[in-house]
Image (cartoon, rainbow, N blue to C red; front, side):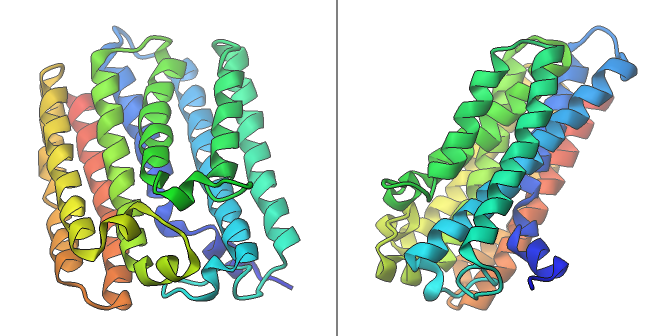
Length: 294
């Protein structure tokens, strides 16, 4: 019997900032761009967007656990526990958990579609299919180095711009810049995770971007992601000066950058993963706060 704590760990809580931050930023963009704040209308929509984002993230994590587990990819890895590979849960149970999470995202998405526009249903279908085929199906794109593209698009552009849209039903340049920032922060989180798993992924045939680049170039790319994030903040500041507070938040990335560059063992990279997740939250909060108080 799988315990509640094991299911929680299997949901990969350190990755959940990737779901929270774009919704937080997208809501702050809506506040900055709108002429008035209607709490009774805005807050329920933002809350539903958060449910969609979190449920998709959990669904993707369980789907990844299932697919990598049945393929044997997680049999030789250095990271935290995986439910299928560790035999803490059956593949069927984890698969059901993944689709339950996807189902919760769909229900919340349907409500949002009813409140705004029905084309969101098509977008939701694309999100679920992309989440499953990341590591599932006959040709998972996460196995050919496209995982970073997935998180940038869906946990950056789509989640951030989508949140702004469902709240105020319009999209601006600031929303796009903010989506780029959120996407880069999510890519950084995935990048450090894949750097940690380079050896095991290479042996199992999982050709992530980190495997393709190698350790040194992957670590350099990790640094460049934060440089690009800084430029995204500066570009956003041309639309709203409050975005500059995100620069202060990016200072939180320095410990993660130092740890990743110097790390030679899996435990150090696991620690760096936590630092990267915290950086994502700090940047997201600072950036959003800057837009709100501006």
